[in-house]
Length: 198
Ligand SMILES: [Mg+2]
Image (cartoon, rainbow, N blue to C red; front, side, top):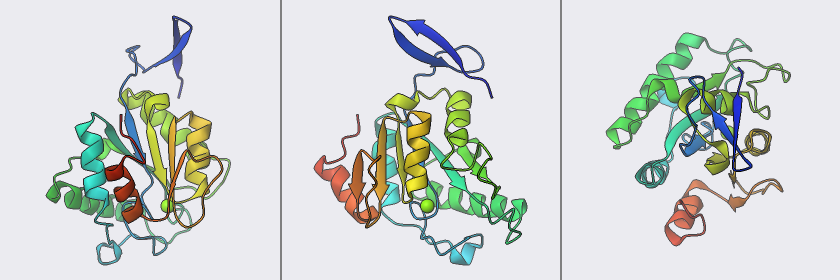
């Protein structure tokens, strides 16, 4: 994946493969622990429980013009716990739940890394999924937000140059720009302006 750069008024502007300026704002979401409860290698519908707060949070970002992208490590595939087809099925199930809650996300906006090997560019904390999706979807990472419950998510955000990095969970992360203990706390923070969506 090759990113092209244009220089304009001393600002580095990322362009996508067609050369168009990538200027969309992205909301990069980790999946397990952010969209759904992380019970470990979730791949069956009966184990997929969404956090209800994810829907109003996504709605607020959509209203501000953000493009939602899911970037999820799924090493359970390489570990042999489930298959690409299982992932495809659970992804369709997830997108259906979003749809029923008034949030339309395209299948192309779901990026997953099936590998266990830490040297794979797509595996967070590496920035591959963020950079590739930004390039393909015309997203300016500096103007974007990543939300994750693992330090790996935040580190991937730093490596990709994502401007706003939101850590969810009891423990904070020094590289995060914002920290909330739970998805409920994040929704309260969004409503109260502790996380401003610009
Ligand atoms: Mg997670």
